[in-house]
Length: 320
Length: 285
Image (cartoon, each protein chain N blue to C red):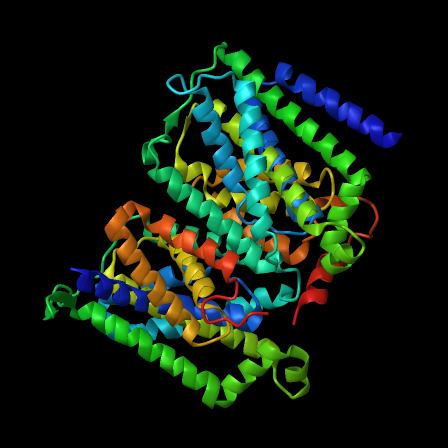
């Protein structure tokens, strides 16, 4: 019961934030939500199913570009929500089909294959006429006042994140979710228990792809202009993974917590150290991996005693 | 015409092979995908650049200094950081090396700015003619050097005590430890050799192409392609992968245009992973 009260309070707070803060903070909150969507979507394939995708940015970039194409006045001129939905569906299908061959690969090979696909897609987008190559694409301007547009993107991102979390929650209660976790724990055993692992893995990957594409859609419409280099940047994938890990992979709210924490830390650091903040991002990654690979969620879950020995446990277990 | 294109591909392929050799060694022995590999190549390139610019030392001589410095750096990084979590899940080491890459790249950016620099050796432009194809001496020498370094590594791994210890650790960690191998030390040495090889590649890269702190990411990805295409676990893997990539890229960009270079290499990567995941030389199963 306590859990639901906390969630209800969180929900109410997130609904009134836009009416209390300025546009700068709201934009910052929207960025957190977009990253939270991506980190939570990565969590489905990387956290629950155990396949560490290193190329999820391909769905982000593809979602952004598909939305730009669907909305473009010269091409299709569709409404934003319809464009967003179709971008998601196309990316889900793409993920499913791509998943069939590459989800047979294990460990590093899967990670490299997804990375390769993301890089190949970037190179393709850089060379196609419809995406206007390296010069980038403009999206139609949003037909709202400046204040209203900030609120619009905030609520769209919030809505997508809530839907994603609800769907993840439902999946975890059904056979599908148990199948994902079984695959993560022992794929051969899952197979022999009658789980169609190929199908389950592909479904997991396509759900992940669907929501990452929605994040790309929102990003593209918010920016109004997209280019291949930033939307297919491998650093975006790394950010998703780092946020998911930092919050706690394989937990429902972990990625959200991770996204908020990492974004706030980077924001504060870049205020104080304009040039060196990327250096600190690297340092945070290294420290996190060494001392707390289970994430913040695990620290605050109250299940374990937190002390010096908690932070050294990882090293004690995995050093050589 | 085609002779020239293929020769260009082979010469570039030799450099690719050397680039990937260190990554392949680290990957094969410790099962670490070293995303920071490109950053080490960049550091090697800058070491050579500064030795040349400040003291006028010829790059082909400072190669050894760059390798030694990077060996020490690699040893420290493996011993002090990566060894601490080496037995965790695979993506843990993957993200860890990414953190190291971000750290190194941004340190380089702070120290040396984003300017593109070049090592201007006097003999850069001299070349000779071979059956109508032009071959620059520098490129040929870089290619031969890449092969010599591969050969030296082969001898170290197969004929020395150290090599035996590295191979033993790679095959069975616990058995190696039981036989008195200090595995933590061996891992650090292996990583050091890997970064020294990266430094060698960086030095040759600096002689042939312009360098900047951001050059690493792209070269890490290229090294992945070479490792995967050639196959892991054999000395010939990087050479076969490097030459394949060099020639295919050379021919492909000739037909499609230079903007297609990345598309070609990553398409090869994905196709090889789907149809022959163990690489050209790898054995099935």
